[in-house]
Length: 226
Image (cartoon, rainbow, N blue to C red):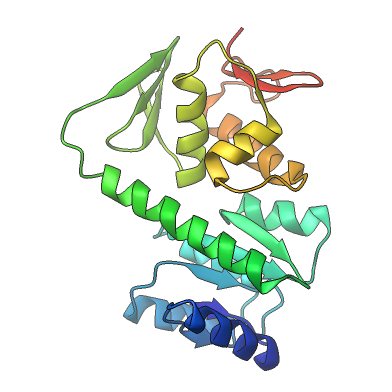
């Protein structure tokens, strides 16, 4: 689903993605996008932030109440604040206008591939739980358990935490995290990493300002625990 009110951009993106063998449902405002999403099964949402009737952020907030469908923000609002806001409400990635069709196609393929792997792994019948201190990660339910309390994670949050918990002694740079989780080249997208780490800490840490699980290694990156 492509939610973009600029019809010229919408047509350009639609034509290109159709040449890449995608089926593209185009929508030009947030309200209609919500209505169509209830009637159509889609694999990915390409979302502009500046939409009539219902903003892209408000649309995203409503989508995230019921779905973990991957959302890629495409917007001319390129400031870090806008990117953090969009990602903070559950977007998986962003690409700033103007963008190349080559980069857009690569991001779309990567997002759908990750979502497909995420869904297929839900069918694993063997219970697998990772443990660290009072934190557990259930690989079947994609949830964290902190001091006996279950916390639901987004796809990105789950895979970031899984990366740390399966490499408990390793320090990861932001570039490495982006490479492993987004499976894409790193273009200095520090804000993407920062937002997801902050949201993950908010879910699993007793005091996110003094994290005990996901520690910052200044000048390098992040690691699990001490």
